[in-house]
Length: 427
View 1: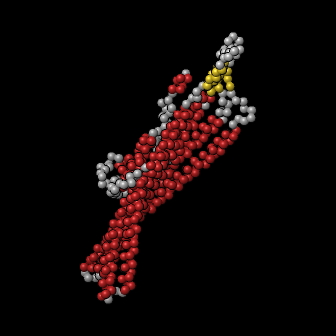
View 2: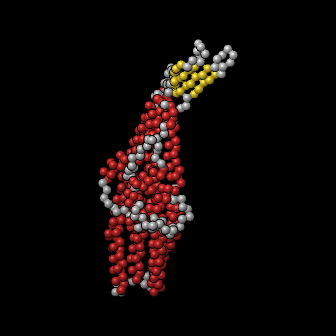
View 3: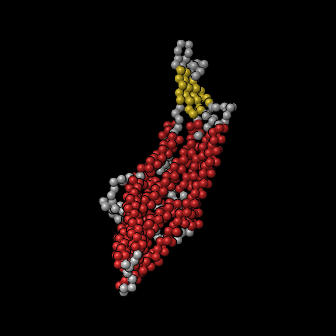
């Protein structure tokens, strides 16, 4: 029987590869694009590929995934049965040899409780890593979008610089002709200097954003191009926040992890209420009337005279109270995350829709009207350029709004991600 118990296999926790696959499966965008991705080339890195690289190669996340192996080792340790001990005294003149075999019964009696505690802790670790993975997906998407938008911002500012140079040149020409004052020329020149300053800063920011992304992916020297296709922009669909929040809070990985932590502490409480007894079965052969070593059963256990493990029980009770408070705090944080990310998403969507539906079309119409007026001799060409500059400012805002929308949507997805059932497999 002991041989059979020793040979039983430990319960298996989820493997790192399976956990990453679970993260991908639970992310709507990643799951939808797995079969729709364009072929990767040496010149192009898609957002989907960037997220997958982060999940598989980000050093910090890979280091955290080793917690699964540690949890598996703890499960195996809890499943192991202590070896019996043997006492043997050699015989000498006028003293026969003696021996005793001792087996700790608590290895069998308390093993189920230890296993339940370690299984709950393993579940907690898995769920915490799931939430960490969702956060990494969000951070990678935000970093990818920011890297693309930073380069687009450089392009927009280069267009604005060309327009402002033309405006400055025309303003100086009009000043020489006496059609405008020196103050107008100075204002135009200052605007040009501001755009040049913004362009220099934008180029540095673009380099920083690209470097941060590649370090996140552990591809420091990767020079592939990035691109935000229209398919990556959220659809700005209406979301029922109350239904979304109630469903997500009940199933969010970090909330479930907090519940698993409570279960682990409760199992530890049961274990500490019993492990002070330390019973052991003994096969004793230390005396006998015929040969001095007749085998007979015996039992050994601790007498609870001075303590019944009250200190450990009191400590675990405090840990349980702490775990309950932490679970409540986690639920409140989850509720806050969902509401804030939803409000940010609504804000960005409203601005995007206003920009696309009214501001940009109106700005294009203003440029068209200005060009028509210029052709009819009603205004100077400077008026056309001023209209173009305002249009470019709107396009610059549109570029940044892309990144803001992707970030707010990714944050909403992270806040509402629901993991599959993560169970400890028994073999």
